[in-house]
Image (cartoon, rainbow over all chains, first blue to last red):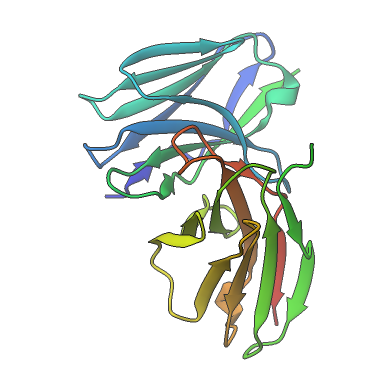
Length: 111
Length: 113
């Protein structure tokens, strides 16, 4: 079992729809969870992070964390073609300083 | 303010050679981490340095080494290059140890031929 798992996609959604990206992790002791966006040929950029169970909203983005189910998700409301990118889930592993990344989900927003 | 800067942006090396990649963190950031990203995969952790001390090492061979300087800049060295070392090498910095997220540089694209 991979430490951080994501569906590689592509996930295609029409413009204006809600895109839902999911991530599961194996280390039950993990404390911090991050979503990064990576455009083709570019480096990852931080969208948001979440520590506590529940939802955290930032503009059009909502991160959801369920530690009991070891599940993190990212919702993008009113998706735009400019949101088309690969979305990486990262987990800060307990007792270490390293992020474990998933392989990323490629999102395509269709105009 | 300048972001995380990496140099060079691209380089091509021959198998068996050695390479040094450089990173300057955001001003005030004391932590630097290095990641390797192969096409189609997520970044893989190589090293983390905080306050000039190694705080973490990933599952990479001893051919990989790094250090952090008094000004918090960092170098990643890879010896005896293999074809499989071809990847995008990313440097990331944060003020603390990464609990609030890292800022990544634009990366160094290494091609080993």
